[in-house]
Amino acid sequence: MSEEKSAVFIIFGASGDLAHRKLYPALFRLYKSGYLKDHFAVIGTARRPWTDDYFRETIEESLNNEIKNINSNDISEFVKHFFYMSHDVNDAAHYIALKELAASLDDQFETNSNRVYYMAIAPRFFGTVAEHINSEGLKTEGFNRLVIEKPFGRDYASAEELNNDISQAFTEEEIYRIDHYLGKKMVQEIANIREKNTTFEKILNNKYVSNIQVTLAESLGVEERGGYYETSGVLRDMVQNHIMQIIGSLAVDHPEIKKDSEVHELKNELFASLKILTPETVDDNFIRGQYDTDEKGQMKAYRQEDNVDPNSNIDTYAAGKMEFAIDRWENVPFYVRSGKRLVDKSSRIDIVFNDKVTEFGIDANTVVTLYIEPSEGSNIQVNGKDYLEGDQNLIKFPEQADYFDNAREAYESLIIDILSGNKVNFTFWNELQSTWKYIDVIRQKWDSEEPDFPNYLSMTRGPALSDLLLAQDNNKWVW
Ligand code: NAP
Image (cartoon, rainbow, N blue to C red):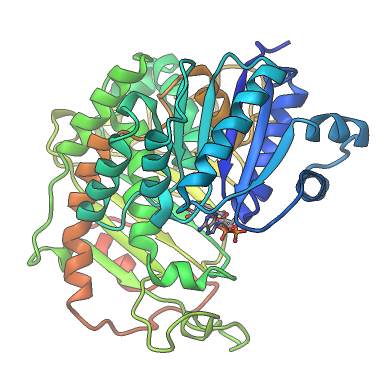
């Protein structure tokens, strides 16, 4: 049985989409696996005037929707730990009531005064909530951990302002910034793969790697999130955070290092070495796109989606070349791309080796692919064909063939880390500073010019410009 954890969770935005689709199912799975058992309680807060009973009914409904073959007795026992308090984040008096309820649940469930404050609300409220937690004295003598969802700012300046706001109430040690890609099993596994496969680790550097490609492709459009997307675009929504963090997991030196502060030092070093573009070099290194209808004219173009400006210039596709001024990766292009309404949903890393790998008995131009989702795994290709003859001994997964089958869902794994005080899989402020500074130059250049949108059909691989980006270096996308 797993080691039981104790805490009172205070969820801001408890009636929302993220809480119902991700957090309650994750908490339920932790309850089933014994991480949460007798010593936890959850206070849900939002403005609407729900009762505890109604709140529990909504949780039951979301568990039934999200989890197969669920036992109704387990649900009934689980929801007894949930309480609701109507609360407006701007009203100081509400925080006093919240503090009293948390203290009484602390006594009832013996949670050692531990608190997890979870921001499942709009980013504009993050600073306000953190300030009130501090000013109304909600913090206790147990642990006090603040969990922040993305987006963390919309550029360097707003991210810094937000960080200053929350830092008045919480230390960096107490802040857990979620990037849910860091909760995904394959991303977490990269360090182990490198550590355990010595040949792979030996050739993972600029002597043997021709280029690295990170793709986060989505087949869905913006669905009902057009309003949010209009303020974001794919560069902010996927590149600044998820793609950067995937690169961070793959490209740091010393995969054997596991201590969170040391892992972050390595990542910080890597991101600080990003070669920042200039307004003059942006176009040679980054391209953008926006989806049109599909070939048959049946799907909505981005500009026809709900809550989207019919003349919107927001990017739903971005591809670019990043470079790092760090010994291991000097002169190796990291090609990245992400887009909506592409032909498939696929998150993957393709590592393209050059011809020097023959020193290790590996075929020239071998490609190693790590699949992140929809399913995890790896593949080795030579000249575009799956490598079938024998074993190149490049990658072996640590355990049995079904290693990934029982992988925890990202939120479940991240909540265990939060309760255990393990910060390896969260982003630190200094990393964000570097990545925002890098993204800001591209964003500012793009915002200053009118793009020729829409420029790719739905259910394709995105704009042709994306292929040209690699062709100028005599390279090609693997996927
Ligand atoms: P949502 O469905 O709109 O939920 C927002 C929640 O905030 C609701 O519970 C709402 O309840 C509450 N709220 C709004 N104004 C409030 C106020 N003044 N005082 C107190 N509560 C207030 O949003 P969401 O999709 O769950 O997203 C929440 C956060 O997670 C956002 O930061 C988002 O960027 C992030 N995120 C979401 C997803 C996702 O898949 N949904 C993924 C990644 C990140 P009332 O209206 O009753 O007050």
